Amino acid sequence: MMAALASELLFSYGTLRDGAVQLTTFGHHLDGEPDALPGYRLEQLVICDAQVVATSGATHHPIAVRSGDPADLVHGTVFRLTPQELAKADAYEVDDYRRVAVALASGRQAWMYVRAE
Image (tube, rainbow, N blue to C red):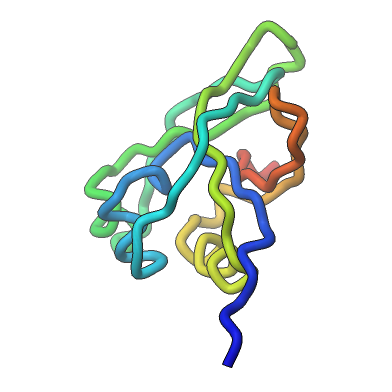
């Protein structure tokens, strides 16, 4: 049986960069490359989901919010995921986040999680 192709790019600026969160969520560590996202800033979000708090070890997570100011920059990591791993990332994130497509500073297109409006 052929393994699924890691065809999805996910930009993470928060807990999905943590090795323990990756092991719990994906079953292995992810390799990534630094990148950034212009026009966004980070705020803190209170996490009420006990499972997510147990996985991340934190009651507050960063959340990206569009600022409209191109000088604002969110630094993070781009990971290459399989569609199945992307679904696992979706399941990990609480309802306050939604996944959107963005253009990164490098010019790459990637998914990322922002504040659900």
